Length: 234
Image (tube, rainbow, N blue to C red):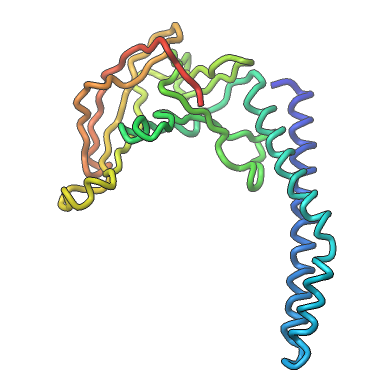
């Protein structure tokens, strides 16, 4: 990521924090105003609240403007982070079992945390910046650290070390709760993708018998991997 983009992200982040401070300050002012009204004698309290309702909240227009500007700034930062080239430690990688396909959600989610100069950002920018899809584009990593490579206008590439495996989970669907009450609500396995040095779009074979276990301590690793030709990002 270029120094110019990095600086732009920092400036937008600080602007967003300034907006949040203004929003919080005005919210506290409204709270104190409501507390003052609540402390009035019961005989005049309804009258004050009635006329106060006509007057509207002081600074209401500014408050809504700050909210809208904060949302827009957050989206701008997200776009800058997710659309500029760079390699980052992979901090988030999940696979949802068949229920994701049934409900139209991505089977895979994966992402990274952005930390300018190694300093973590504060809420809401401290979350992983996520991608999703019906598979992942992956290759063998040169080192021992899982990485995500952000590419401009192209799907990210996951660089996965040899023997890399991650925990996958499957939750019991609602229709199974009463039918199989003795079975665990969540089961686990570990997928070790088969990858080579040339990037390939891959996923878990649909017909594979996954060795689900009721405890992470008992988890088993499987490596059944298939290529896909229609990698879709969400």
